[in-house]
Length: 286
Ligand code: G4P
Image 1 (cartoon, rainbow, N blue to C red):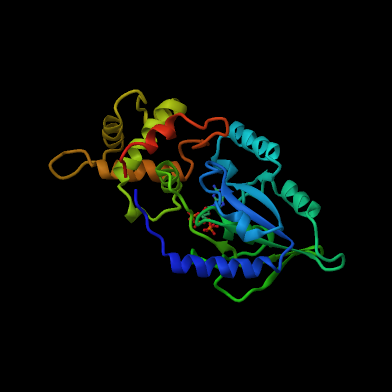
Image 2: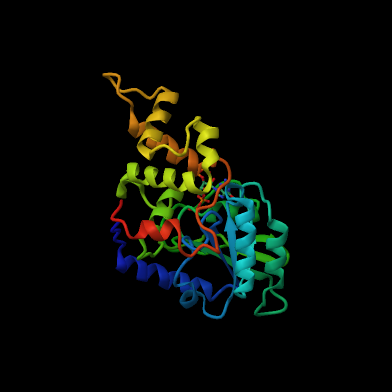
């Protein structure tokens, strides 16, 4: 996978985020709980300087609960503050607010000010809206902080910058790119979706073999292309001429994975440095 971002745009975006970060006491870095390292901003340290950072593992409802707990433990052991939340259902918010409360503050009297940053699609707008109890999302996936700044009052002691800092993910590692694609943080037109679905099937057959059976009544041990064929068969995805519509199976599988219809599952575990994804990185895929 060879994805080119626009270096000029990225520099501008980072500059804007840096300017806004100066105004806040604490930064919430949002990551996807299903792949907290792959969705983490690699150059966050240079962006946030000495500000307090809380790593927020969002979409915890879609992730494997046990794995998320080991991620929180992992972050703590590395000396980072981390919390798992579900921005849509506001779960984990009590812990999130208590971590924000314990972060350091510039002045005693003013409310604490907070900003959310992260890559596209990790749930930044959702979290802002829920923390500030705002109904409609005002932000889109435009990189940088594009609108004039405004503070949303969360409580008498806390204000939130109304626009998140959006940065593109950076990755040299193919496996990271594939995980981001599976989670929907990379535009689909950049990818070979069938290869992506095949990788997902291989991953599921190793780590969550029951899920394909439960959702599609397919045995995870059969070859991935056969799995796609079986999905087409069981859902009645037929093309004219009676052949199976594999493309539709691919889209269905990827969408249903992203929506959590295959059940909660995680794409990476803290204890697993090698294994499935290390093997994937070396193949010329996607
Ligand atoms: P962003 O600002 O970081 O780009 O993310 P955004 O809030 O737009 O959220 C991206 C998608 O993720 C949205 O779904 C949103 O509903 C969903 N989402 C955000 N937080 C959570 C969470 O904690 N759990 C779950 N299950 N989903 C979450 P969408 O389908 O793109 O849009 P829509 O369904 O909201 O219309």
